[in-house]
Image (tube, rainbow, N blue to C red):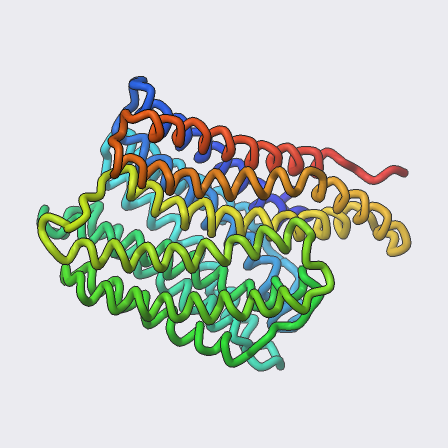
Length: 426
């Protein structure tokens, strides 16, 4: 299994962590509104289950798949990735247990184990770059900056775990750590991948290489400025960084949108998921600017609470990141499974078509439920601000959004299970 199904193994395991995280998050969210008992640690466990076990592992598996073809090197694994697999998932489990029992040294050591996994991959990529006769593409520069941001985020987390900050600076350091990992690592990886993946999935060519370069320059600059704004507690600096990030996101989004307009397959499920995810990224950047502007006074001009922050964060986590993963998996898994399960070139096309038909079933319900569910979370936050957490519209928004998200994610999970269980006929 480790030898033949290496990328799918990481991708499917990551999907398992994401599914568990979604269920835990829905429980915490609904329990809060219904008055059911919850532990305060569950929220941070939910976040790290999604970002470390799910998203980081998904990115690791995707890099194993994408980087050798991008470098155009004949790369065949001569070593098993079992060690990295065990280290990545063991590190994730250690982080979750550490938060559950409030053991911060355990969290720090487990986070270092996750960092070691990517350090090993980074070392392998450096070796491939040296052997490549292909000019290093923009994608790999995105990946390089993303991994550097990951190491910086993990380093900051180690300092937090081992008590290097004063209590009043710890929360600011946590914000910097979160944005280094979420925006520096995850967002740069997704944006770098999408410049190649989206045209491939859509059957088109990228609209503008210049816009891709602008995104490559502005997004890392904005992230660096934003982290600096958090560390020095400067809302004005955070706002400026937000506008730089929004510029990069708009250039990237316009590039993807214009690529979509000329696409051969505009309305396949993977294409639509990736397109919608791009829109949520731009909306998240705009919402972040508002939050930075709002926090310039103490107390803030518009009071914000947990509901607003949950709605804002899940625009990024569900609307952008999770939906990008869903779109990428909807395209990649049928291709990978076909290549691994069917040796005959002639027999691959019918089996691939069968898997694609399975993915496309109920696509409009899946898309509508997922995106309306994310929009409903934003509505929940706004309703809580206007009417209060216990008001009828706020409670209705909770249950409607939860139901929509469960429908959208349940349809996707069911398709993945059927996809993995669907073997070619002899």
